[in-house]
Amino acid sequence: MNVSDSEVIFAILAKAGYERTEDMAAADVILANTCSIRDNAEQRIWSRLELFAAQKKRRPEVLVGIVGCMAERLKEKLLDSRKVDIVAGPDAYRSLPALLEAAAPDNPQINVLLSREETYGDIMPLRTDRGGVSAFISIMRGCNNVCSYCVVPYTRGAERSRDPETILAEARDVYERGYKEVTLLGQNVDSYFWKSAAGNTDFADLLESVARIAPDLRVRYATSHPKDISDKLIETMGRYANICRCIHLPVQSGSDVMLEKMRRRYTREWYLDRVRKIREVMPDCAITTDVIAGFCGETEQDHQDTLGIMREVGYDYAYMFAYSERPGTLAARNYPDDIPPEVKNRRLTEIIDLQNELSLESNTRDVGKTFEVLVEGPSKRDPSDLCGRNSQNKMCVFPAPGDTDIRPGTYVTVRILSCTSATLLGELV
Ligand code: SF4
Image (tube, rainbow, N blue to C red; front, side, top):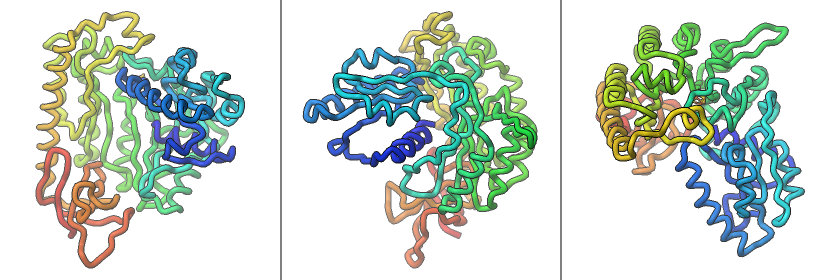
């Protein structure tokens, strides 16, 4: 999501005459696009601000800006730190050229107004990836769910969907420029909805329209909410081979008591029913998830329920974190963060260990199979190997043929010969 936002910011600033540089020592303006989802993400930004302060000491005319969720959450507090000249929330990117124009080291500028309409739908993002293979397309902004632990509804505002015509135009544009994969992004894509005189468009309709642009354009999306993922969406995925067989379905906990407290608005049974439906329509679909260890009041039994659902689903991959209380959220206001750090960490370790086993089991089941792999480029570990992802979003590594040049963005068929818990290792067929 932040990559996609940064690309919108680059487009807005390029139109105002700014040029992008990654060389901080050459920059007149240093912007940090921030995330507030966990405390350590914010701590990293505070450390970066020290780095930026060193630049300002050498070159006092340099302007430093914090944009995105941390700007929205901390507002004037960032200016009070005296390390920042510009603060712009996620709905204020269009005002960045004006803020930069007005800002001076002794005249900081701030815009943290949230909007009910802003989607940046008319802005063609300036792509920052170097490979030119895979592009992110934002289809909506904000979230109306208010999960009790989550800061997003406060930092990114109310949910709003982007005009499907602008999304399709952006997807066609990247395809024409040689990209072979698009990922449609939203906090809760299942609640995407657009009403127009021509009729209503829900997420399944949108996904289908993007998939029909070209059979060799892969389509991914993130993130589904288990309470909202519909049979229509799952069945639409099943009808198109170019809609990737991978669903990120954050479970967060396997305990109904915790799910209720987290305000996730589904039960363990409901979640497992959605998994059954996915497997019925797409037996080869990877399912990945998010898990929080040590949420407020979590008992050993709740934790065991989380390990249990992980085993039952057999996740292919998971993002796993210890609960980090975020100021201002429902959980921070209503429940004590009462699980001692050593217990949280022990539970997180058990969750990570289990997921490593599950990932290895999942990859081991793929040994002997062949997959269509979209080549991303040389492998980081050994540049004589190539790497790319299959439809299930698993990284596949295989030796590059000596006689042919396989460019990033090419589809190849790979037979899997062995694996680790993170990677499938194979050979070209
Ligand atoms: S669905 Fe819940 S966890 Fe996801 S962004 Fe919205 S409030 Fe946060």
